[in-house]
Figure 1 (tube, rainbow, N blue to C red):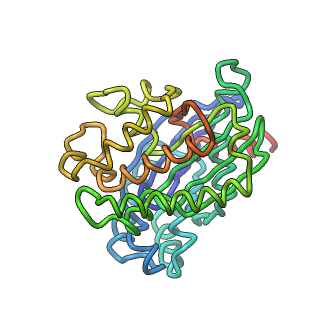
Figure 2: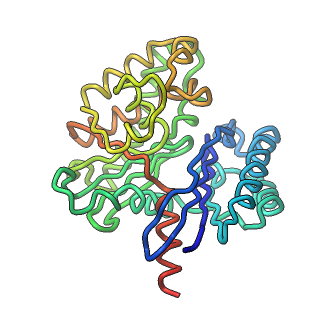
Length: 312
């Protein structure tokens, strides 16, 4: 048995998966997340804010202590949308290297999409209730990735409509004004025009939704009193209910959203934009539902590490 770990550093969150690997099988040891908002202001300034870097480095130190305690053999650290955009990303890379002893991999949107597809679809394959092709939609803080495929990606693309980026671009009022919502919706629809030109969204038989915006919408739909990944994983939400939840979130004030026990404090200000992205995607794909997955890019990174180990 070998113990490996993957860290996914996105625009909004810093997530860790530690897993034991034996004979190709993977068993979670620790799966955790911290909101660091590394990408705060990056859409506007194209630079990491020093405070955002310090928040991120503090969590890296926390994770480093945990990795040492758990005797992890191998760590892979992947950074995504905000890090691709930041002109001072060398500060981030050197800080992570000094703390964790590994070089962060600043991956492309296409690589991010491929990892997400692998992690999200592995458990679905061969199950009649989840027909193919799959459309995996990973709604992040800075970007959203789309991957269409069966046993492997056949077409993929990434566009800059993450929940943090969209919120910073368009929302100034509390709750958002009608004109702000219209600008938000128009931005999403323009991005989806780009996506539709690159891959056939309407070919999808099963839409699989990933990341915090999607899982939070699922928790709200299920009426959970507290966030429960086991209840959320592989739940199916009708598109009509996704639409209703997105509309409700857009009509709420910050205080009203914060009062919802399943909305993480670090997502309160951005969840409405993330829910609207999901709503618009389902409409564009003409899908009647989304299947929600708690397994995502982290699981894809670990799966890829397992394949590398098996090939040795």
